[in-house]
Length: 398
Image: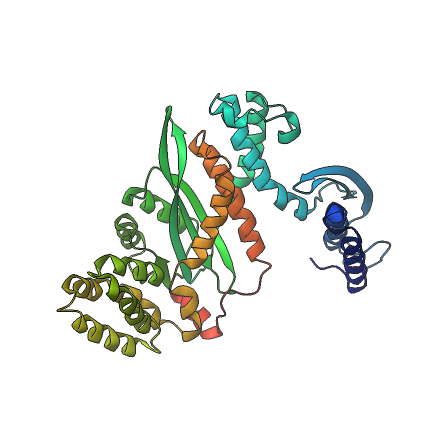
């Protein structure tokens, strides 16, 4: 969705002048102008024509506007939501921004209704939630969101050559006891080079049984063409991955390997040099040179740090799988740093709740954040690029 050049220039000028004159005091007005213009552009795309425009691609008719007040971090913003005669159009820019906010509010409201941590949620009012805080209203609101989120989590998948796997923990109240539950996340890179969140699940732990169920669900939804899994080292994940996708190579996160190595360094004054040696291995121009440097480094520490030497010989080769890939893909696929940043965004929202009233509430909020992030990625530049031969190879796999 793109604004016409003339409209975009006018809107940009108007917003810049407004902020220049009023600063942050007029930020809400700037957001109002931008959202109204974006919604109009969305309606034009939906109808296949602009106002009063006659085209062969037109699929419907505009039908005025409906007022709506949106609560944001810069205050309440009155909007004019474009309507269509078929009544089926609703601006995507409004939906995306509200899902995670609503899921967050519902999580807090559930705590209030269930009488959990009322000290933290005593400020919840109808103004905050947008609905009366009662068990029936919360149930209706959660059902509405869950329908959307379940459909997204169960959607059909396609070919994703690279898949990143990671987990984080959230505190959830189960049976009156607060426990840490694992949030399992899978992120893929498609043949178009775009990132996409493939799946999410809230489980009791990272045990093999939970990772296996998660991976089997991805497989049943159509995930295929995987050339490489990228993750940190975890016994449960490793066993599950081998059971469900036995033929797919694995890349152990190089960043975490760097951190793990420090546990085996016997003296503080050796740590800097060890870090340099490992970086040299990982930054080698090709796999042959990386293995040569690895063997030399293992031998160099046999006497001064025998445990480190043994660990390097056993563990560092798991971080060299990436050398089998095209050089242009290695930087993006040698660590799980991208997923780590995604986890930070999840944490930014979940820390407001602190302790979820149940696992469903946790899954609801995490799904909302991941869904919105995944949609944003589709409008970003390509994360990686694949040539035609690489696409054909991926199609033949699995």
